[in-house]
View 1 (cartoon, helix red, strand yellow):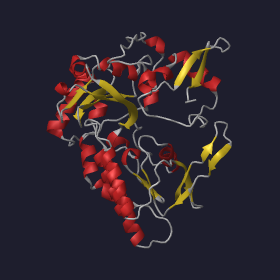
View 2 (view 1 turned 60 degrees about the vertical axis):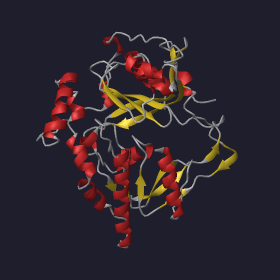
View 3 (view 1 turned 45 degrees about the vertical axis):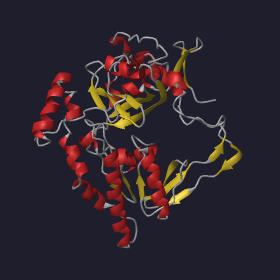
Length: 405
């Protein structure tokens, strides 16, 4: 996908499209009538104290008749737009998953080019929705990952440590032994599906891809829908511009074409699979029901199962569960989290401001530590959030963010 994106960028630039790699959209710009005016990129060369350095460069304002937002799962601009225009009114709460992945260079004798393995459940507890994947690709490369839904109840659960457990299964360990881990990463996924798709058009813009939640969760597949939704939005924008419409209008053609597209049909067909696991049917009932949907009903059921609450409302106090003790890493197949982070290729300027902000550190600790006993330590796949011992604090701990120094 990376190679394809690079190739596609070359084609776009040859047609006169301007691409600004390395510049993130930091702010939504609005017209006086409340419609989208465009976006602004962040200022460059700002120190960690928030003051300009000698390399300061003012961000750019990019204005457009239409702005298409493709930020991925819960993008910081997309969530503002959804809230401002109430695009999710009447929709189910969006649900999310955390995907953790490694790339290995394996023994050529164990490489099976093109092999795809999908599994469900293990090593997760049966009440936690999730599954794994293994892809053999390139030259002796294997991509192995685990996706964990973020509506789990037990705050002692660590998605990162569950991924380490996954690699100990003989199905995966036999492939990895004698190989070398060369890359690590994690990302969030939208799992709400059909029930959680917001309205996608608003004054002066549209949502596409994961910003709108177009992942087919049972297939763990969304790139095709991201591409198709981008094409539909572009076609709607082209039509609107060619009509020389005065003022800013909604891209109604995009909403309409989306509902007639393969995206809508595909997501509607699988809409009941993900939520079926959180009905009284449970894990095994959810598996059987999903099989019924996949091979017989194919989305024709007259009912639609609901996501009743947002993910964060599912977590329960730590004292309701036994503490989970994970095995220490062996340094060959399983690794500590800092070793994994060193393989992400992430790098920041030494004096760069910390982009994660907490309004009130002590208030956050007071609200979350007593019931959940430091769940932040465990849900983060990069060790960024941490509670450290501090006897000067009420609960003997202090919450901190470990930014690169």
